[in-house]
Amino acid sequence: HHQDCVVDLTARALDEARLKPEDVDVVCFTKGPGMGAPLTSAATCARTLALLFDKPMVGVNHCVAHIEMGRLVTGAENPVILYVSGGNTQVIAYNERRYRIFGETIDIAVGNMLDRFARVVGLSNDPAPGYNIEQEAKKGKVFVEGPYGVKGMDVNLSGILTFYESYANEHLSKGEITAADLCFSMQETVFAMMVEITERAMAHTNAKDVLIVGGVGCNERLQEMMSIMASERGGKLYGMDERYCIDNGAMIAYTGMLQFQNGETTPLSETQCTQRFRTDEVLVTWREGGSGVKR
Image: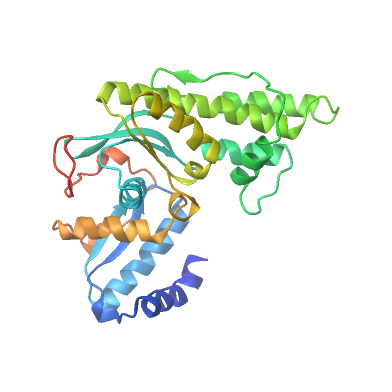
């Protein structure tokens, strides 16, 4: 799919920006983490463009790109970051040129859990399973208490999914509970866990503000719960809508530009992708070393 679309997409991007290939300074691509086939396809396209037009390349960490896009769009300076998506669940704070991971899932990501549960209760994939769970949860009236999987600074989500899946299989067809009630119950439980571990990281780092990034960050209920917690600590929530929370090319281009402006390029021989590329592996050359934040 990526290879089928890239020629037309590149032409449209240049046309909308009113640029020619020779006007481009650098070709940026996602080095990881992610699924192997899409990563490899996109990197192949990026190498082709770079070689064709004789441009340098910059490999970008997908997770760090979410953070930098969030900081750019919201104006947040030095928040604790909750990164929640289909493939990642992490609580992050910046220190000494690294985005340090304070807590994370020990099994599946929150977005993956919500997507899988949407299938269990028969919700559509259009426009997205997580969005449909959010809308369904607004109609829920009965709270079904399930496991609460906070393990220190980390979270366990697979057990919660198993519980609500089993509960749905046993009670849904009998009319003893509704899909809306189960979506409401699961969402409230999991988002409470996200707020708890985020607040712990804020206490540890003396931070007041929170930035939510990643596809699940679009969820307005998560933003509401996090905003209440942040305001009680004298801080603020920085949230975004689906234009910037969901994966997008602009975040890769912008983060690659920051790296390039600070002298980073990726040699052609090192442009292979990796499905395992930790957020804290990246040396953040474009920010000051301490907690004082300036690009």
